[in-house]
Image 1: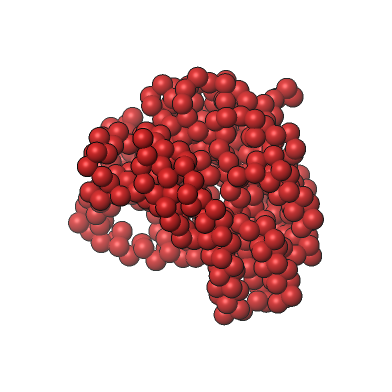
Image 2 (image 1 turned 120 degrees about the vertical axis):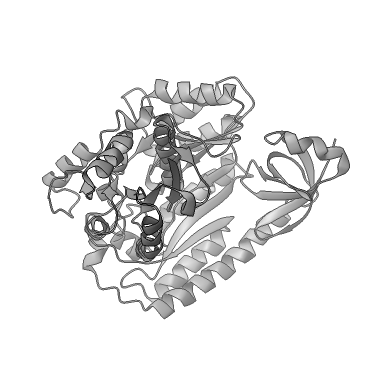
Length: 453
């Protein structure tokens, strides 16, 4: 039996897919890169943006054709699935499964084959939207039992970079976000589990460890441990490797965290700090729990203690009630910070969130226009930041080699491309090496250089 996994969403979704693959391969399934050859297609989805949900539903006609040609063909959807989306997908997919129950996937698929009917997990039929609702608290605690999920051995897609989830869920209830309703409340993984997993990865030759969580800096498995302490413990693991982490909520970034990153030699000069809006009124309506002044003070601290740090962010344009002036406040903040990368999203209302109750009163045309303007500012600041690298000698991690080029990343998460010279042919079989290069030219999205001895 062959399987194919399609992943939508953030790095946490990709990490989940590695665990799904681990479960299926332990059950004897074989991976195929071609979905048309698969007996089982697993969609690991993200409900954050409605466009992704619509795209998944739109692809389903194709799966119907596969089923005609292959009577054993089955479809599964899992991941971050909102209750409203779940009802829609129950009519399309053979199985809708909570991501925390993926260990039971082979058995559930077997049951689908035996019964020949669609099946879904039993979930409480509860309605809740409010963060302080007692029923919501009960519901998310019940759904967020990760005792087995974290123990699943992932099938890593890379032999160089490994995603390591340290926590899951979120307690913030940003008004536009579905994560607390699909992932549940925050649950931190035990320190020893994380350290043991990373030790094994380093022993296996991994060079880049990316710690994952909806809000990594609120990691706290017990009263004696927090995220800065975890970083120090990982940094003390013997080996030549880099540490990155995603993603950080500005309200929980502390001076101790920034100083820890600065002092730990394996922690890279890269921080993703989700802004979402540069206007205080919009931030309040988003329930982000910080102001633009607070955000700028964090950036100032980062620049002070980690001078060469690349800072990336997320921004939503066209949030309900957002005016042209409020959008311009975001643009002005982008100019001040000079982000290295900005992931710009047009606001999309999601049923079940607080902002869904607000009128989506910014037109799609206006949202697209604002997206273009924000991208223009990003190109300018990213190019300015990258040009500072010209003439610099830096270390990169080689990720890929083809017939013409070597591709890699800097400690600051910049993409790098080098021409493949005859004397560097050995890198074709040595991806995952750290090498020194001299930067010769740049554009807004990456660097180019030459290998040096």
